[in-house]
Image (cartoon, rainbow, N blue to C red; front, side, top):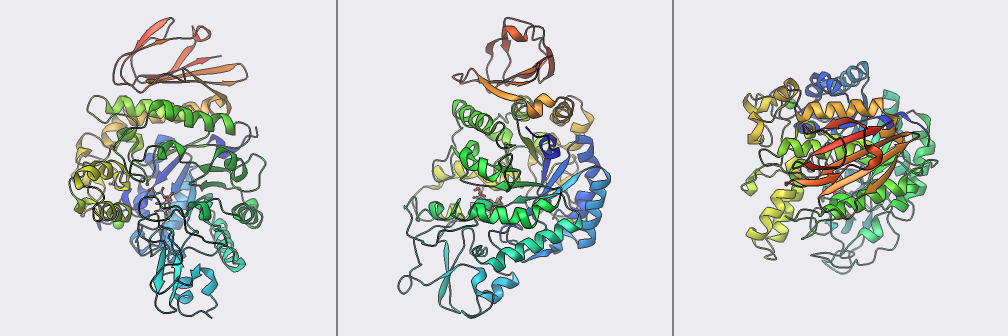
Length: 555
Ligand code: TEU
Ligand code: CA
């Protein structure tokens, strides 16, 4: 297995709107990020993945871009960006940009032109179709944020495709001019000195030529078989690699909903010519009741099966990315751990152990290193996310589900859980802003905040810091071979990692009760390199406290 810097790195995701506000307008910004680089350096991360900072009307918080080569007004200026990049580089931190090129904003100049007339030179930059008959969309596909995936445009009396909101028209990647525009724009950023790209829904850029109705699930037809992992996606990524990526020492991670382990070997193969790694979603998507919405916890057996399959099948063939949460997911500790007082810290540390000891590049989502929790939503007015608001209107507005049934599903899984401001200290607005934050601060900021945790060596923060340091010191954590033990245990996630004569035993209890565990003979006398409890891991049968986690290393 080739050694690469991005395999040994730990990435920290910043969602700029909610990270740090420098000027009191209630919105996080680039100067805010620059002011917190020392904090990230202290934590020990190597790379920042910056969610979109480009010019945008913010229908989807920057994932709807109207100018790829300008900074969003609320976030600052290009000078602020350059300063942030150079200050990061001074501290040895790299910056990976979010590349959102499956779609643009409808306010992007390409689309403004495209919709003007059928003859416009930009017409073919997007995906236009005639309606079926008067008043009917070209097919029954639904968009990811609810409603039809087609929007009628009266100017030319045709429909355009949007897999997300109607303000996010899909680009037509079959048009070579579109590809060249995207490659030129990427080159421009690379020349500026950025360190890589996280590629938004990159598995969706190629659509089938034929666009038949999809199988109807809840409301609309399923577009995925025609839009995800489409016919030319690998050809387009190889072209991107050849024309841009291969010319720079950068890292790339594709966000690839619908990816399987087989496909991951193509997208991110060791000797491939596409991407370095992909985000797969099987472990965070396996639990939906109504579409993605649910109030049920995923079973540990299922979680272990999924994660272990990715560990095993990609070994030596492709590279994994490791994550529990991001800006689209609920908070990890609330979802997979236990955010009740007395359990929050220990279960947050347990989850961190479980993930950071696996093979792949770990991603920490802002606030995860503090054990930040879901927000206690009480009413619809508290939501900001277009997906949550549309979903409520679609499921409850249609009368299909009652408020009572749907509410816990929405509140527990809304993307806004991850988007409340980072809790810096116990002052007003958690130190995030001197103004009114664009989205409410979690009321638990007085107990959970960076100031308190950096001062307390027993905190979740210091535990993450230690895990990151361990990865740097022990190649077995990066490159070792994975093996799952006790696959039928409903309470314990146990695995080993092996590289040359070094071997790790990772034991994580997902239970809120005491559990028994027998130390395998080969680990008797091994040293404990990290643990979230005060326990001695000598030999024989031991009792694990709720959410206990530890790692033994045999030399
Ligand atoms: O998300 C794409 C994606 O896979 C979504 O369907 C995701 O699963 C959904 O947000 C969760 O319900 C990316 C971005 O990460 C997301 O923030 C954007 O809204 C979306 O693309 C459109 O750009
Ligand atoms: Ca601001």
